Image 1 (cartoon, rainbow, N blue to C red):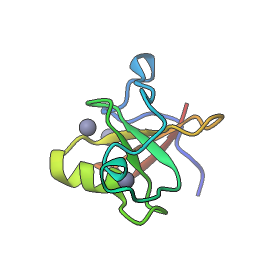
Image 2: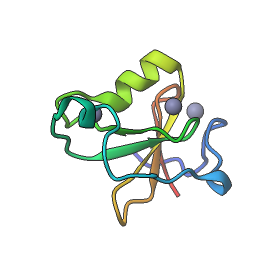
Image 3: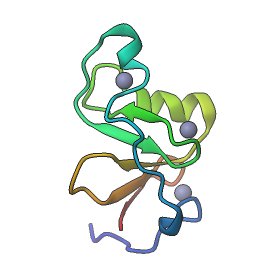
Length: 90
Ligand SMILES: [Zn+2]
Ligand SMILES: [Zn+2]
Ligand SMILES: [Zn+2]
């Protein structure tokens, strides 16, 4: 499927929030490991990805309704909108 390059209404690439710390803010409390990190573009929260045991980024969306995360991984430039199920390279 070709990637539609138009970002959704929830994502503003001029206002990107990057990770304040390279750690999942929930996993550090319990000592759990994570795989990759995502940054919420509404509140700046840093959470783990769906390959991680706790899937905190997805949980955060369900808890808060904050729709967009970006990858916090170095060299990765993409966002994901949960509400639109949309992958957005930037
Ligand atoms: Zn969206
Ligand atoms: Zn986590
Ligand atoms: Zn958030």
